[in-house]
Image 1 (cartoon, rainbow, N blue to C red):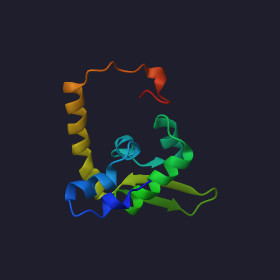
Image 2: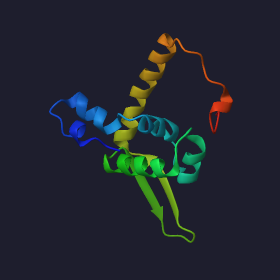
Image 3: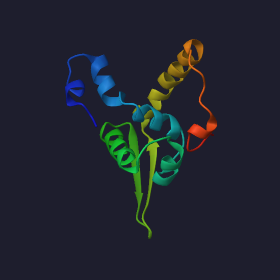
Length: 119
């Protein structure tokens, strides 16, 4: 759930955290990366997220301009998600965060069985 106090702050950093600051959004952005994905694929890959929360996060990412939702007029209906230009611009930041974590992490790496998908 978005915190409007962060999104409406005078501080650019606080507004950025309001846009991408919960635990799910960076993970979703990282999983989609440069691909186009359907909801079911995201649900299978993103660890420990409920379908309800995934739906909410995708909607907020779309509203914030980080994600594009592509709805096809087919039967059965098909919807795909991909990162927008703004979302793609966030990928290098995620890479820096990953590098930082690899350099300084002190905890053990979880077993592959702790995730829905270990790829």
